[in-house]
Structures are given as C-alpha cells and as structure tokens.
Length: 184
Image (cartoon, rainbow, N blue to C red):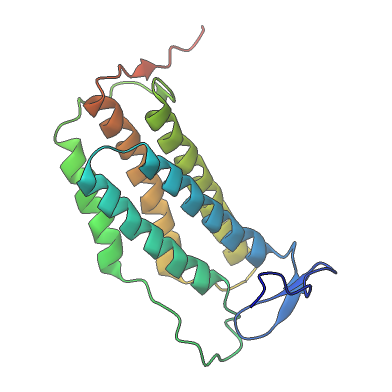
C-alpha cells in the first residue's frame, strides 16, 4: 500500500464517516494542531531522563491520538470504525500527576519566562501548541461544530500539565526559573 493516495490533490480530505471537506476546514485545522502537539510531546520525551515521565507522556500521546480520532469524525455520520474514547479518569490522571510534581516544586511567586534548558523550552512550546488546540476547540463550539466536551476539558488540563512539567524538569535539572520582571 502506498502512503500517497492523490485524493487530496485538490485541497479536499475525508473525515471519518466519509464526509469530504476542505483541508482548511476548522475541524481539520483542529485535529492537525492536536497532531502537531503529539509530535512536540514526542520531542519533549526525547529530552526526558525519568522513565516514569516518559511512560506517562507516551500515555498522553495515546490519548492525543484518541482526541484526534474524535475530532476527525463527522458527528452527523455513522461509522463502522470503533472510535477510541476518552474518560474522566484520563483528566484525573493529569491532575494527579501535576499534584505529584507540585510537591517538590517551590511556590510560584512570579510569571516565568520560558527557557533555561532545551528540555524546559520544549515543554513550553508543547504547552503553547496545546493552548492553540484548545482555542480551536472553543472556536469549533462557538461555530456550533460538535466537540466532545471531555476533549476540551482534557486539552485544557493537558496545557496545565505541560506547564507544571516544564517547571518540574527545570527543578530536576537544577535550572533556575527565570522570573518575568515587567519594565515599569
């Protein structure tokens, strides 16, 4: 089987369920951003040293594929394909992992400028891409395009997780947080 189909040469693609849409459709932009986030998370993992964090991030990548499948499905069409699902327990796992990492982090008393180490910076880039995916999901809702509510909740919590992960990685690497000092 060849990877190229030539069916997208005219700027159209198919959702799960068969509906053809423009490649610039908001739904395509949204799940494309989730795919981008998944790739950034893979790069984040390439910089991780702790096996537990690597394993957890791979679990998140699996959830991102699930979210991508949900976003790529036409909600108005039936499909014979079994679409993986997201559970409230997935959101709870993110919260639990953040709480666990927070136990070793100093209290945050200022805004933090991203940077200080390549691993920290990549976590922040992933966080920013995650926030963009969240904004696109919200835009879909505002345009009355169906988005599973749990998808939005998970993406929101994931961006928080990525922020805490950036701080945690910096802490483990003994990288000093860079406070933002506004010019007044």
